Length: 450
Image (cartoon, rainbow, N blue to C red):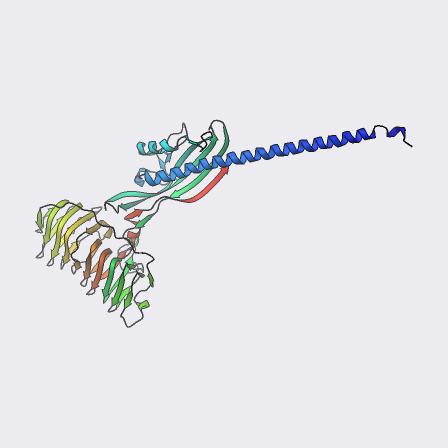
């Protein structure tokens, strides 16, 4: 029997079911819409990130191909970031923000590729915009050695912070925005990185030794004697007659020691095999003069010379500068005297280099102030006389360090022989000077998407 109050129940049930389906459908629509919006936001954020990342990569490429540092003396280095004219040193890639750098042309070069620059997707319809800045965090003054020209110049190794903003769409009304910050830094490899470097061989016969000292602690001796007197050879190393290396020895073909004691007592920091040969770049061609000079107490100035020959106990004074010489010969107790106030002497010698029974006097006792580049193939000689303070690079010749003398600095040659009680004291400050810059590299990275 059907009760009167049951009439219309099916309709109500149907309406409730329809309402449930309507609400469920609406929830699905809202969920799908939210997912679509989230996917779009992620897509636009990623696209903006790629644009911001492009700003970092463009900046890094610019620093490695188009940037040349200026001396640290231009800046107030007591501030971090460093300041120029009371403001942080910076390159600006934001419209309306001015770069603050000593060289206007350098700042303009950066701005030309990073200031509100547009990028277009491969489909040609979507675009992004880069705005990137660079801020100088650290600058360390060094002398740089160009391995192509062998020119020595004052420069700096620097650390920069790069801040890049990527906009997907227009920068005024973007659909995606990302910020990337990175720190880049340039390092330098020391050209004079060891006491002795040879391309073919090192032969040491004692009694002689190689050690080191730190010029920041004063002159060599006393407590200022260290175990950084490293040596290396692309070929062999041979030691005999009570020779000692207060450092390590790296070689490629063979290491031989004929001392009665095990070789570990001859090389205090151990030996190892070079993973790959060290490069010995050629000295570029240079001009020489026709003037001959003999020492009679006079002073000559920098320039081009044919023969400089000092013998018979005479002396020759050299004014500060760069000397291109065909032959340099000092013998018979004679001397060449350098000016201690000079920042740097550079000698390019073509055919003959022989200091035998004479000396080059460097009163500053600073090896970094005397650089000798010998391109000849005849044996180069440093023997006898007073202590030599300087560096010698002879990539085509045998370098003979002999006599009961001390040699302060660093010595590189095709082959090196040490005999007669000569000792080498490596100036550890050369590891921090005469550097060959390496490319800027990323050292930190942070990212924010909006």
